[in-house]
Amino acid sequence: MSLQNFFKFLKKTSVEERERKPSALSEGLCRQFSLAELKAATNNFHDGLRISGGRFGPVYKGLIDGGSLVVAVKRLSRSFLQGSERFRNEVELLCQLRHQNLVSLLGFCHEKDEGILVYESMTRGSLDRHLFGNADPLPWKRRLEICIGAARGLHYLHTGAKYAIIHRHVKPDNILLGENWDAKLSDFELSVIGPSSMSKPKPNALTKETLAAGTLGYLAPECFDHKLSEKADVYSLGIVLLEVLCGRRVVDHNAEPEDFHLVSRIIKCIKNGCVHEMIDPFLKGKIAPVCLIEYVEIALNCVCLNPNERPSVGEVEVTLELALELQEKTDLVIKADNPHAVYAYEDLSFRVSVEENSYWQGYRYSGDSDTGSVSTAELVSDAESVSHGGAVSIAESKFKIKWCYQILNTLPCC
Image 1 (cartoon, rainbow, N blue to C red):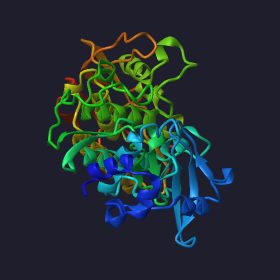
Image 2 (tube, rainbow, N blue to C red):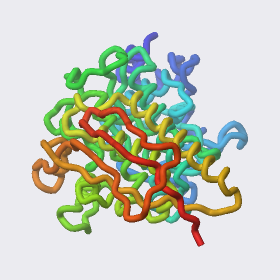
Image 3 (cartoon, rainbow, N blue to C red):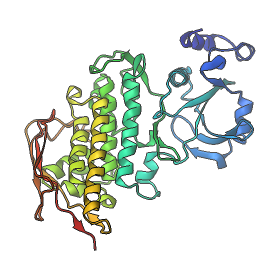
Image 4 (cartoon, rainbow, N blue to C red):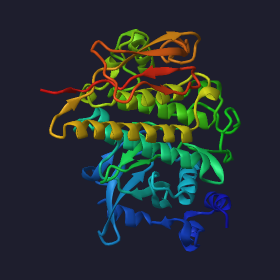
């Protein structure tokens, strides 16, 4: 029985009949739990075991298989389960998807008007908690590794399966971290299946499920025009990259109007030649200039207004890997010069000109857009720069950004 027919079967058959008949999922694709099992696993969904909550329903810590396995049990809200379409969507998707950067669905329960999903446990919680909560700040290279993991999971969704899958809800809350800081995408309630996988997905190819859905700030602008493609996920990922760098949320209701949206703030800093002012204070002096330039460029490319100008998620993944490699190589060079010294990288700024509207920041202003594409950039430093290997040129990007810079001299922290 196909998954599609199985879910039709769920709708047409009574609960009692379903309990007497095996399903395709219970036969191998996914484990089917009884409601009694999951009540026992969570002590009847005790508030003391509640991990998190949201509009789709609370998540509880659970113990199954005689207490030998810790799991996350998501009890979907009744409003979410109306018609069971979203529940069936997530089960159908996750039963078929297996990737090291996607949270694994271990099983489900669909009984007595309950819809419950059982996932592997991610012990360190969400990226959101580590960026904006009370957790200790994440070091820069760990942030890069987390972003790479999220990009790999998204890359698999877009190109690794028979059909491209658009996540539609990429944000720090939905990037979960394991014991070894491995990053995995979660929450597929809003995901939709697109056209057959393509190496270069084409925007505006979908006609199904094109209504805007997701979280304000992470939604790509074309979603408000009922257009949807894989590039909407790229936009959301770009916003996450900027949040990771800046340590602030994409939408700040307490900020001045011109700084309400994170992209507005970043573009203003770059235009004024003070890009270092936007970086999370914890990261000051810890990011190699060559790494920062690669990172900022790909993040800005991701949030371009025109989806056709955005890179594929595969390009994002490769560029982030390059940024991490540049950071590690630069760190090694510095440590080789003086292994016992503690160094801080100098502040780095790009001074740019604006030619045309390319970035959308109109959440507060009814869709108005401001700022533009970057045409040229130059390195600006108040301190004397010292070349470690000479000038480096990065190829002109899709935004016509041409970066010309030198690796700055490193100063010891006293």
